[in-house]
Length: 456
Image (cartoon, rainbow, N blue to C red; front, side, top):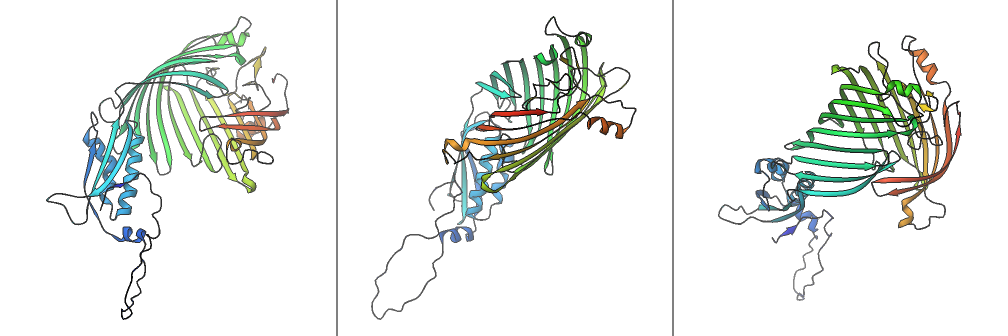
């Protein structure tokens, strides 16, 4: 058997080339059923005797063993190729190799079995220090990001990262350390030190956060979970001299120490413009029990369903909601409340410009809900089909939601009644451009409805 480059799992040809034989008149003709090459490979039992690595430098052997253990369990050549491909994907996901190639060959040597197989992984490690420069788009904001990474710091996929970001509304820099569990990359631990300065013109507010956080992430069945502790020193100030008295009252320093838990199930084929699948994300945060002078319980969720329809159309339905309950007699901080409005929630309204406000400065709310129904269809007459035109989609939408403060002594029925009052909603149509798996751009014509006094 020659060397097999296991870079693809495409089906093997059903049959080899035709071969003719010349026989005499008296020869007995024997009809032989052709056996496909696929069947030969699947039925041939093999044993993976050795797995070699070429190119390892600072990566520890015991850490790599966890990623390639399944290769030794392969029973036939097709299984060897499949499990080797899966191991290659695991190795690349670690973020410590620039390139990974797989070579499969017959086993040689004194201890070689007749059906023995050797698998060799040819790897190229990342340099000890790497740099990056890129731009980020999200939440209706753009930013420039500079980063320095130290991958595979101690030889077991640890990573140290320094990142500086300068954006239209936010400037930040931070230092983080990341370490995965050997053999289970989804189980990982991280520590972050950061400073973030943000401007919020809809509230005439400037906020500077200096903090530290630790996170533990792990999967349970089909869900992913993150446990987080965060300690942050927050400094709030007025963005302009015309800030309202309510904003001036919020100005000053506070110390928040909180524990949070996030659970997510994501079966979407894309997070930017999904065509199928669903997302459920639930987050809880409890502040005040581990120190600090801010105390509250905060719950919020996000639900999204996507269904492919006829004529390459996609129907998407989304629902968000959340509630903030202050603990003690101290009122909630403007930095912890929810905000609503803008292209990421209710289109047709200005960014975060719905709900309680004072002299034109929006103060946020302690409870909210928002929903959306979207229909994405191909462009009329399908211009550029199969190429650049497939990046564009026609977009029809209906959004609705409400944001308010609740009196927690009134009970659940009064809360639901208040959230159902003065619903803001909008509808419209437009065009969506998908920029790979990075971002989406929308050009919409919106008609806002249910506008209340003070909304923008």
